[in-house]
Picture 1 (cartoon, one colour):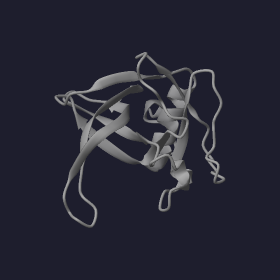
Picture 2 (spheres, one colour):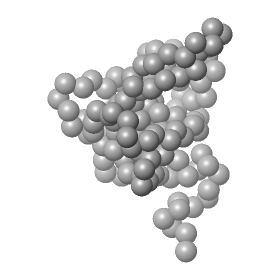
Picture 3 (tube, one colour):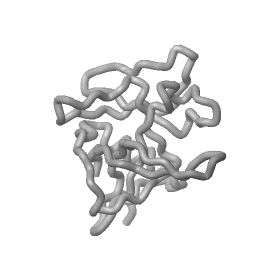
Picture 4 (cartoon, one colour):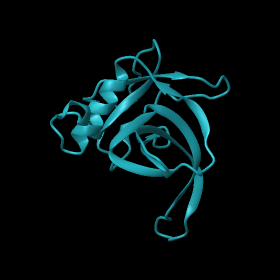
Length: 146
């Protein structure tokens, strides 16, 4: 839980219909036996949640351990507290515009090639779990259920 990694990821094409592959970043919210449920981390081409069509209320900022949130200059409004991470690979940059989308989980198979980035730290681990549970419509965390 809470591991962050990057992997090549294929997306369906837009109006052309041609799929394309790019590197995507994810955080694990539910590890499994042969796959994990993950949430995507994106900068939306540097626009953060000011990009048209992106719902800010479904996102939280990703911040480096000990730093503060940087909001986009176009007046971004985030209602969720940030998710604090520790980068464990020295040559990896994490943009201040990185946002985690809680509304769209992905299934990532364990046999795909990944590169470790780091992990969610401190109180942010519970916050990550709570925001994900809320996005699915749960009023309690699964770990709090009898």
